[in-house]
Structure formats: C-alpha cells, structure tokens
Image 1 (cartoon, rainbow, N blue to C red):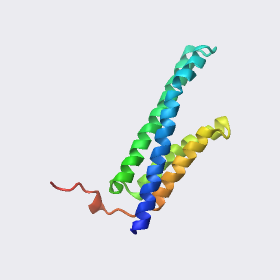
Image 2: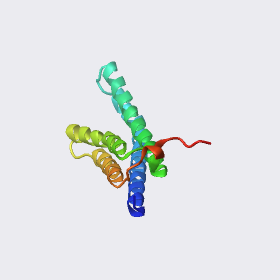
Image 3: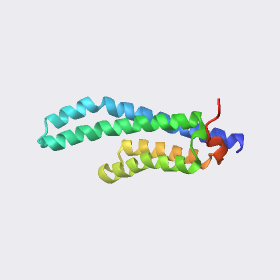
Image 4: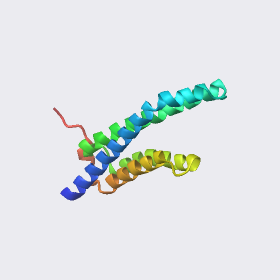
Length: 138
C-alpha cells in the first residue's frame, strides 16, 4: 500500500472518530434536558423509559464507535478493508434513521459525515494479509 493511501485511510478514520466522539459527548450532555422534557410529557412510563434508554444508548454507541475508529486509525493492521466498511455502516444506518424520522436534522449530518469518513478510510485502506493479522510472538 502506498504511503499516501495509508495516510488518507488513517486520517479519515481519525476524522470519523473525532466526529463520533464529539457527537456522542454532546448528545450525552443533552440527556438531562431531554429527560426533563420526557418527565413532563404525557408519555406512559414504559415509553418514557424507552426514550431515555435509547437516548443514552445512542450516545454510548457513538462513543464506542469513536474508540473503534480511533484504534483502527492508530493500528491499521487490526482490521481488514471489508471489516472497516462494515463498521462504517453503523453511523450510516443511524444517519438514515435520523433522516427518515426527523428530516434533514444536524444529527443525521454528523452521522453521515462520520460514516462517509469511515468509508473513505476503508476505501484507501490497503489489503492486510493473514500474516499481519496473526499476533506476534514475544
């Protein structure tokens, strides 16, 4: 793999990680206000709890995926190109859901940007041989 492709792949994965981390943190910090709105709504307790749980799960997923993409940017040999492309589907699927339910909302744009950056990272990633995936002996 050329050095330029390696650099583009790693930078793209790092951008995806930063976007997801920032989005996940901001989303998590907004939970207090969102839960207050839900508490004062006429939602049945089951749906209110579901809203709260899904809100926090979305934040957690973004932060965990940020960690995954950051790790892959730092250690490109840890995953193959197809695996990185499959992982990019997580924020892309979130973007589709946001667009389908809320329209052109900024959260969808954030997830789309993170997913697109991860796909670019996958596209520019070199092929990894099975030898590179084997743990090194100490």
